[in-house]
Amino acid sequence: MLRPSRSLKIDLSYIPQLKSAIREKGYARQQDLADELQMSLSTLSNYLNGKPVDSLHFVEISQRLGLDWKEISGCDTSFYIERPPIESLCYQEILKPGSLIRIKAPNFMGKTALMAWIRDRAREHNYRTAYLNLNSASKMDFTNPNHFLRWFCINVTRSMELPNRIADYWDEEMSTSKVDSTDYFQEYLLVQVDTPLVLCLDEVEQVFPYPEVAPEFLGLLRYWHELARTNPIWERLRLVIAYSKEVDITLNINKSPFNVGLPIELPEFTSQQLQELGIGNWELGIEN
Image (cartoon, rainbow, N blue to C red; front, side):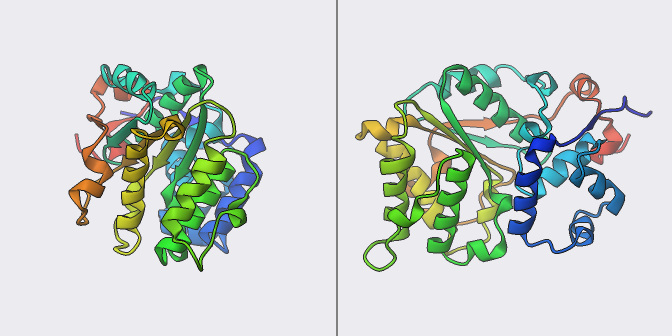
């Protein structure tokens, strides 16, 4: 049975951000990206030129480019399907100083949409928000912890629409990238105004295959979360991390962000919820 038609298109105001994402991912030709996605060139071309494409294709392309599909489509929260009591738990948690929410679910189960929902609730309280999909990093960005953390800080700054001041805080000779990153957040990003910052990190599993980078980055997130206990500045940081598979790296139990905070494991959509989304079972690869 065919599903009701649902398509999305990119808001034209986000075209510059889209072009920047394509450059950062290193796609020289549209065909290269289409081949990687196993998608027709015409579908990809429609997406890139602000024309309507199927919603699942829209989400897939956006995630591959590290873009927030909900934000760039201008899609309102009516597209989001609630799964109580998950939303109320996340809402209560994001209001807590120094909170951390970790969302685990397979792809296309609503992680990004839930993060967008959380950001919307945070904005209702005049919180600042930032979103970063780690899939937007290229392989070169994972070369070593110093390179990755520098990339991370720059792109969080860009998401917050602030000037890049990384050069003022980065000292590769006399300091470490973890210290520099912490100083950059504490002395610049977190003190812009006296309001919390909700930082949403999507597809965190992208860092797992890199044994030099993953423990340093994930340990840093845990360290920042714990700083809120002793430093009022760090109470402003509210972390939301999403990932799609089990953590397949060895982490010190005291340096892991995956055993603290509020765990959220999204269930599969019910048949009724799939109908509300306009998605048929065949589209999710589920046999009848």
